[in-house]
Length: 464
Image (cartoon, rainbow, N blue to C red; front, side, top):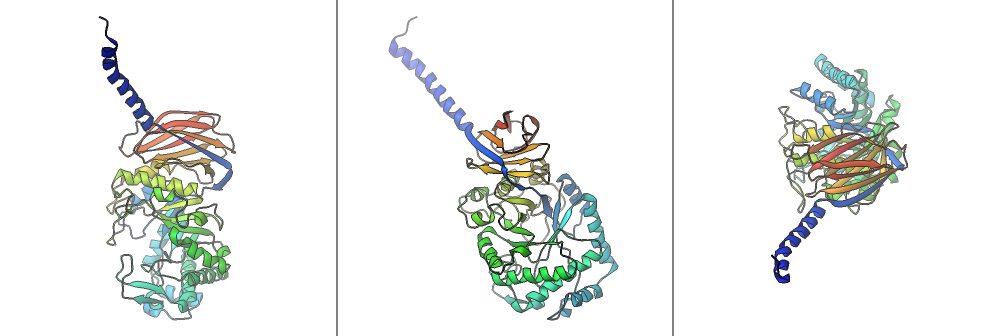
């Protein structure tokens, strides 16, 4: 039967439109993204770790998690017991050490020694954290300004040198038990009154006083990690360290980062240009990082640590920080600690593994310390993060896609050893819990990797 032109058009139009919409939908599901990585401009990858607690009711679960993460660092507080009413102004390092030994016990020594030996067996380096200035030396304001504490705490300028001597004495005591740290944070988040708030000038004085005391007491090899503030406060504190000529007293530049990946992708954010540049002041160590949770800012995605989306965001966060200059990452925290606030732990307080544990174990843990991190060129679409690493034997491409659409990624690796001719291994993690569909049709030619990356996915490719 022969159809009239009008009838034929009416029958064919729906088919044509459906084909057009299908083509548009297919394109939307596989948006093209291009990036290049230059190993001629690189910075070192030092390793990955997590905050741990000495007061752990099930330490065997935490130790196994550290093994599975191939952790190179732990951040931990190991301050020996002292009686606060015995502290006196003007104490020297030796005076403080006598006070520590006067309050010592066999139980304390065994506890600390056991932890130090466990870390040595695992090949893990210790980053010490001393949380706050002792109460007799601090000043207080009954008005709660921020954080979980019921009052605000401020450093007394007259006690800064005393506190530096006390911290040094505690480290000398730990050294006597065989515990020598790779680095130390002299105080936690000096920009916040929830720990101890320091003016930027007083914090610079603390760094200088501690470095001098450590040098005089055989701890010259221990690096000071600072200032340990959030990115928005970084310019403020690093400026004072520069003015005091104290940046050379730091071994690591440190910060705490809990921003959304969307914000970390924006170079206009405060602190991004100076901090997440190319390590102008020394190697960068993120001594606390984690994804945003229910406190997410307006307009950003909100989720809890128990959700798979949290794990994917942590991978994206890691990639963005490493891309922008960080050399090491310490996740907050390995296991929840019961202090009345919402946890971020890979493990719950009773030791159950959360999705973020599997996510970081699958994608971030295999990255080898000592690798070079290539400078990334170009800007990828929102939600897509790619980071490239290289050792003398292999290249690595870490990709996360937290967007709602697939991306067809083309990633060019250049300026390196040339060990990027074939894909030797691919590891995937998905928020759905299933690996299928995370990566489609991966191929490599002339050190250019091309692959489709599904939504809610993270991929680690090992190239040879």
